Length: 117
Image: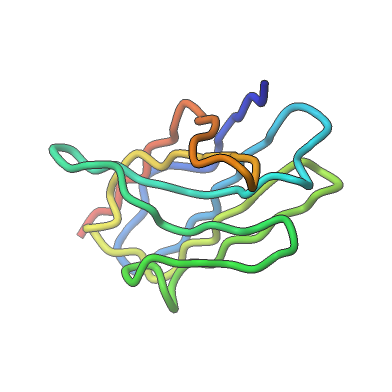
């Protein structure tokens, strides 16, 4: 069982930046694929970015060039640095953790990001 706690959301003006953090419990963090997803009102949850245990990253087209995912295995924490935020980035952002060999995983409770125009 892995528990995830997100933090760092808030209200920011368009063009601003936020850094989200996700702290994971347990001793297997370094073996997990970590990801950030988001869900806007009335829309399905969508991938933002993932980072593999070895550090390779994957981004949604909407995040490329503006967002950066990173991980600190010593702190059991994954980060999402979000720059040049747009109103359409407004959503609840969720942290996800899954072993390499599974398609499903664990979810955090989410953190709200609101970007005003």
